[in-house]
Image 1: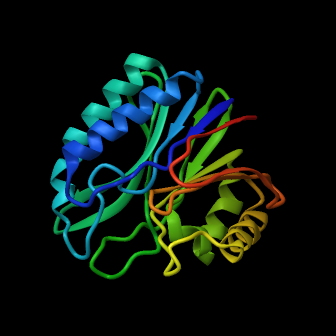
Image 2: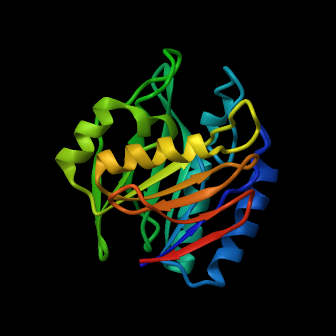
Length: 221
């Protein structure tokens, strides 16, 4: 299984600019013949507190990304804003090689103005069971219980994390490592740029590979 993690730049509220970047980075990743291409949290609209207008593009975004996945026979994981009745979920989708949405995760760890998720699901692939969580979910105790119950083979974590220092520190990486060790699952994390970065951890929380900035990270299991 080959995974491409893409820490792409994201402009808040600028869908077409983000889409051009998404397509460009998608094509860049295809040169490495990946099975999975993974993008950050709400990567096509960004999110500025409390502007939920990007949720209106949910249908268009799913249609465009599904077409890319199907035309290139690749799995795609990415974050987006999902409208639901009178509120919005911070969600992430897994689209399969046929362009079908086979897994949706709704983020747990969000302020009250969002709808919040309450479960973790898995999807079967030819490589094993896959689960997705989003950014701060990594540190949520309820998430840990669900992951241990579902026992996925691989966990994907789209992020949009910008520490006050503007850089991902050793303390940040240590915190990620400790949580992955608790979850006991091989984990792929990709952050939006800036500050960017992508990381792969084994089941014991050991860092196997990393990239910095907006550099593409390719990892083969």
